[in-house]
Every structure is written in C-alpha cells, then in structure tokens.
Amino acid sequence: MDMEQARFNMIEQQIRPWEVLDPVVLDLLSEVKREEFVPAEQKLLAFADVCLPLGSGAAMLEPKMEARLLQELGLKSTDRVLEIGSGSGYMAALLAARAEFVTTVEIEPALVKMARDNLQQAGIANVAVEQADGLKGWAAKAPYDAIVISGSVPVLPDALLQQLKVGGRLVAVVGTLPVMSAQLVTRTGEMTFNTINLFETVAPALRNAAAGEQFTF
Image (cartoon, rainbow, N blue to C red; front, side, top):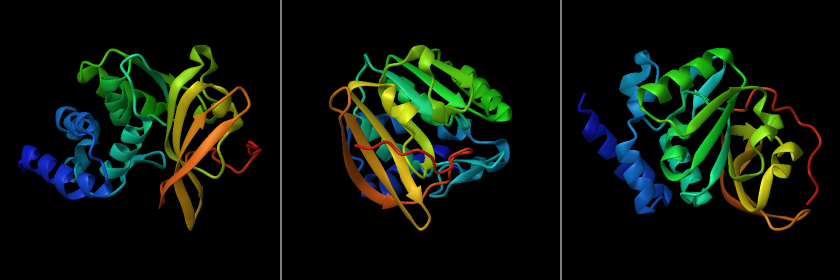
C-alpha cells in the first residue's frame, strides 16, 4: 500500500469536501502519520472513512471528523488544551502540533498505554496522558484555552464547561442516537456560554457518558 498516496486521497476526497480548508490543518494531516497511531492489524484502514475500533469499546473517529473539530477550535501556539478520550493518541498529536501543551485524559488503562507509547515513538513531548474519567475534566491544569471531546456525550458535563477560560472554546459531539450534532461552545463570561451547532453527525459514546445534570445556558 502506498501510504503517501492513501494520505493524499484521504485529504482530497474525504477532508476537503467536509469544509476543512485551513491550510495549517491540511498540512498537519500530511505531517502527522495517522498510520502510526492505529493498531497494527488496522494499518490498511488508517485512511478509510470509518471509525476504527481500538478495543475496550473505544474507537478512533473518522479522519474528516478529527480534522473538522481541529479546524473549528482555531488553536494558537500559546493555547493549553484538554482532550477527553485519548484513544490511540492521534488527536492529541494533531492538537500538540498547534498548541503549547495538551493534557489528554483516558479512562481505559490499555488505551492510556497505547497513547503514551504512540506519542513517545512519534517524538511528541508537549502532551501528558492521564488516566481518569475525563468527563470530570482535569482540574489540576485548568483552566484551558480549548477542550475537545473525542467521542459523543448525551449532554455537556458542567465540569468541563467550568474548566474553560473565558474566551475558551470547546468542541464536542452532543446528543443520543439518532440525533447528534457537533457543537462549538465559547465561554463568553464567568456564567455565560455561546453555542453554535456546526453539523449533524454520529460518534461513538464515551464510556460513562450517561445523561446527567445538564448545564443551563
């Protein structure tokens, strides 16, 4: 398999049609080797337009979804980012290429090891992989300039919203089957948030993502 041709096809046939046109994001998708973050038995599917199972009920989101969420965050080189759901470490690698530092939280021990190993092998040093229930956030390094949830949740946990800086952005897929939407939430004040529905989609639910207390805007 010609990996570079497959990567080019992924960008041109899947990602650009999904309105991902930021040249920095497109360059990152060429530079960060997705095939190095998938399980060995999945390598031939590294660039396919599907969720890839990682074990423990987790999955990598489709490349176009990862790219679109990354673009919507509009990261700056000074941003400190929180990711919920490390998976294989690929999204953290993309985030780290644009941000100052990334904290990624994963509940499954096997995936914590996978993400740490993949990031270390890729030589990415500005990411910390923490084992915990990410839906509670990671208060030790809060507040964050940006938060991304790499999976779906029925409602946005208040704990995550409260760990955003004023002016900070959060992207997530919110809802339950059959109706989910990708949302961009911006914290506009201490108690105020602005939410934009970006597009309808579906994504695997994060573990422990049960309907709970919903934040009232």
